[in-house]
Every structure is written in structure tokens, then in C-alpha cells.
Image 1 (cartoon, rainbow, N blue to C red):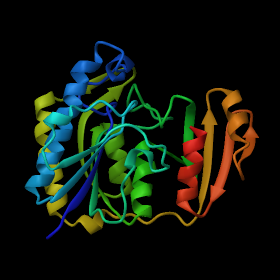
Image 2 (cartoon, one colour; image 1 turned 90 degrees about the vertical axis):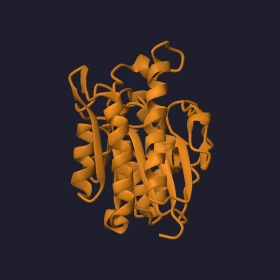
Image 3 (spheres, helix red, strand yellow; image 1 turned 60 degrees about the vertical axis):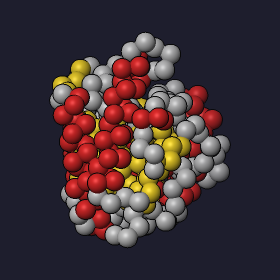
Image 4 (cartoon, rainbow, N blue to C red; image 1 turned 30 degrees about the vertical axis):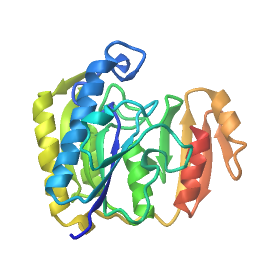
Length: 268
């Protein structure tokens, strides 16, 4: 491919070794070590993309403050997106149809899953999120967003549960499981092995049949956000065309996925 423009989005709860919320919080001492590993996994993905022929790389720091990655450690060709603009694309902010592929690093299982002790979707407000009766992870939400823009997600790294989800969605997506969650614990591969497998996996994904990773969006979306606190559900129920199903659950429906992303931006 003559021009290969790649978008890479990085989270931390799916990074090798991360097990406790303190390791994801910039105000906690433990965060520094896993900030290093998050950066190393992103650099490995960038190196794999460059090896595959990438001519342009955009990297979105997509965890919490969006100020986690060490900028100077990234390849010089990478453009780093830090902070949150407030756009409905959120973890894919700045992406458009000019990109050839999307890579997810450090992603994790979603709310309602037991595959990661830190399983969640967007914020800690949701007990679960469903699209058309399917539990939603951030991976699924933004894979759908990429599909809305006609850009395939070709690679994802994170916990084993999330990798299983990606394979179920499209078996052509390359996955690297760096850990498995059991109860309030994780079983991890060696961090250097995670880095090596991510580099190899991204290179393989981008030199393969990228188009085979594309998915078809559902024609209609029935979105159910179930909150931990009923007060949050009540507030969200006033979003246009949303309705309160029960004290904890809000329903929103649309045929347009961008409407769903806009709703989720205000519902989280």
C-alpha cells in the first residue's frame, strides 16, 4: 500500500500487569510503572506498523486524563493526541475516512464482564451497557465507530476475555492477550513478551487482508444504559428521545450510529 495512514488508540486497563485501580490513577504511586508499560506497548505497536509500511501514525492517549504516554518515546513520525476535545468519537477523536486501519492497545473487557478485575465501559457509572441486547465494551463501541467511518479495526491487545470478544465479532482481527482476569486477580505474560507479541501482531495485521477486518453495522440500535445509581439514570432520561425503563435503566434508539455516540457522550 503506497500510503498507509494508521490510527492507534491506547488505554491502560488492558496493559500487561495492570490489576488494581491504583495502577491506572496518575495520582497514585503505582501508576508510574504501568505508564511505562503502556508507553512501551504503544511504541511496539508503532514499530510494528512502521515495519508493515505505515507512512503516517496518529496515536490517541485514551485513558483517564489522556496524559499518560511519554511523548518523547514515540517514533518521530507519530502524532500524539493528548487530552479530551469533547467530540463524540472520544477514544477515536480526530479519526476520519482517510485512515486505512485502526489498532487498539491496552483495551479491556466491558461492564458486565468478569474477564478483568477492572472491567468497565467508559466510566464507573454504568453497571452495564447494551446495544441490541449485546453487552458493550469500549472495544465494541469504537469498532462500531470505526465501521461507521468505513475504517476496519485490525488489531487489539488486552485481556483474554476482550480478545475472545474481538474474535467472535470478526475472526480476522488479530489479537494479543497479555493477561487473563480471574476474580480480583490477573495472570500475566512477561511484559517484554507482551511488547514483542504486540509488535509482531500489528505488523502481521497490517500486511494481511485489512479489508477482511471490516464489519457491517446493525441497521438499528437499541441502547440500554444501566446505572449503578438511580439518580444518574433519572438525569440521563431527559436526553432527547431517551426514556426511563426502570429506576436504573435508560433506553435510547436510533438508526444512526453517530446519534448513539452522541447519546453515550452525554450519558456517561
